[in-house]
Image 1 (cartoon, rainbow, N blue to C red):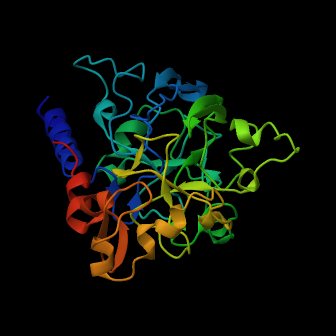
Image 2 (image 1 turned 180 degrees about the horizontal axis):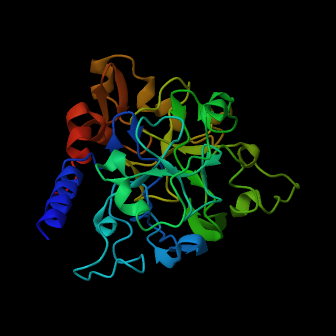
Length: 321
């Protein structure tokens, strides 16, 4: 009994000290849609090989959490439930992770950057051995060094890559500019024509038989804190407002996918990115009337400064004890 207590204590202590978004060199991936303005459906898992048929939160795996607690059949809160039930894990990029990983059996058809989804207990301070004591499928990786060297297309520009996970099934009704449309639930996960067949203006031609050019332009969601190397400023999303990536609000970009912002509303021209000095930045407001802010030698939307700063990110990254 004492031995099991020591193991449990050691595991829980390691988890408590973990970074909420994964360790450096192996960060969690995917957009946290848990607080999206339009609720996303639960994720249905039907993993027959390991005997898990359950519904999980729509943000599953996007940050470190004991996702199996209360969902896996063996994680029912009983005193003798397996130790893995309280182990935290998240989804990771198999090509940018220096921790132990394994291919997802929960979501085998889902992908990150067009590669099969992988997850890691270790990056969240957990111990994968507790999971594999019970799992019918052994630890495995479906992406190796050779695949990681292959160039990827449609994931955004270097320095401003897409951050979503693709494969989420079905559609969800989202709103932009006062109009609604049935978007794919995996919206924004890679560079794609997400407006086609979804946004009303992009579905029904006008009286002259035309559809706006921007409807035929690819875009994706990006990390607003780290996005650099593109010419046009990304913009906060309306469609999935309330969602976040590592604590920062979600932004989208046409430019990172090789196109231009063609909405003709003045966003690019009035963006904070156009200010090149700290003085000009602090006296400027973007199209939405939001104050700009100076951080690390560049001008960004002011609300991002306390989130994207080194101190702000560290605070957001602290996992709850």
